[in-house]
Image (cartoon, rainbow, N blue to C red; front, side, top):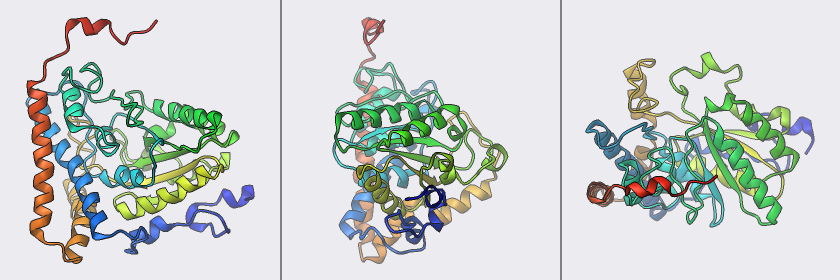
Length: 351
């Protein structure tokens, strides 16, 4: 593909072999993923698990059971669920500090995540990392990261390792609209395209970064175009529709596995809570938040499609009840799990 062709925004590309704009089609109602009622149930369950888990996190934080920083993913669940559907075992995920949903979607246990949030020994980092620093090599989750944009260069490094080893695994590096303006992001873009690394840059554009609207903080607000100067193709996706995310994820993953280099997916989404639990989010109106909740909520979209497919309200309530049971059990586990021994201060420390 020519440089000129690849520099066009995704919705304008028509060349043979270029990724299409199935994300936009799905947003208009076409079920491009061919999802069945059974798969929709699993999608609903996965997103509900994230939503209910983080609602419980908010309660625990308010009661002082979770300390430090805590950034909730509520409203954005369709992104990580849809992208996870496009991956295979061996693919890697890395993200920033809004990371609980990513962990659960990767298959990390709710007990371990909640225990880490509350500083308990049974947590994924033995209670020493907290909300922003959990890892699971077994699940190929390479962490939440507290430094803005740090995961982008690390995710690029994961892709370099895949290229070096000659496998066909893909690395997903999630980051937000705020991190998109970091210098290390563009250094990573340059190296990724230069070496044709199999990395997908998933920009979770929730419109406000830490609290400033993208229209006030970014000269280029179409984040799918951020790779143009490096010849990296990009696509805008309705990040509130899990079908659109899955469709775009499938194409981006296929692009990377074919050895064509990196790909950028801008997920247009919205977080319902503030940047962190300490943020009152006064930079936006309650009416704006309520409108997104009422018109675009990712969980309600799947729920409504299941109802339209003649799945009973009782069955959907049963799924929610199952999820709540898992979340309640995780909170109970975290409450009774011991704190790390003082000797843990000297473990996992390297010179």
